[in-house]
Image (cartoon, rainbow, N blue to C red; front, side, top):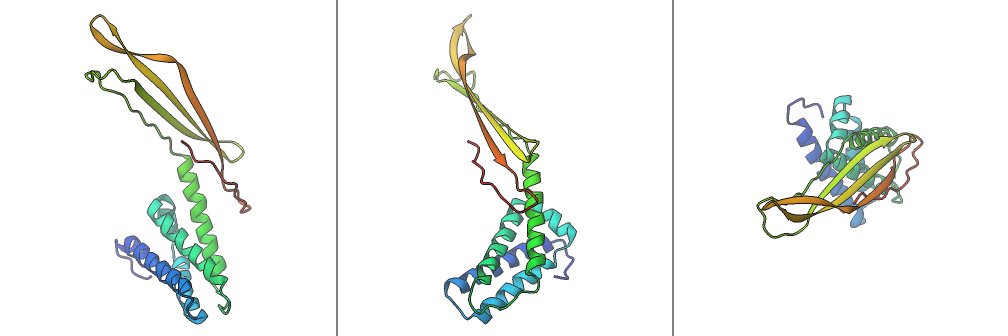
Length: 193
């Protein structure tokens, strides 16, 4: 796309998503290999036309990342169709998508999540308060460790005022996620709870 308008990323993603859906439809309906090949080339041309700025923006956006990932996955499926010819830009497009995936994973590792749910002091239900704190931190050896702790609080009456005191027990969970290495080997990771 040679359009340099401010809406380029949104329109680019919309067009790429529509093209990927069209290719998926063609694959599902088992259309002619030449038609599938032409649609896959349209997607590949769009992917290789991405500038470094587009690549950086796409790796930091979850929506853009998922659209681009869907597009390359669909093109990869098209390469397995008998009669579909060689794609000149396939390797370059795959390299661009790999860069986006790597940068997307790096940006996700840097985030620290914290979620707290605490009952109001005015709440007279007497139910236990729960506080959940999650922290994700990157560690050495390409691992990401997520620790999650849950502490239950019970209401107690003291000096005619409700106060919360923690129970002596707490549940601590730890998930270890392996990051993508540069050799293309991926180890499945468990999702944090």
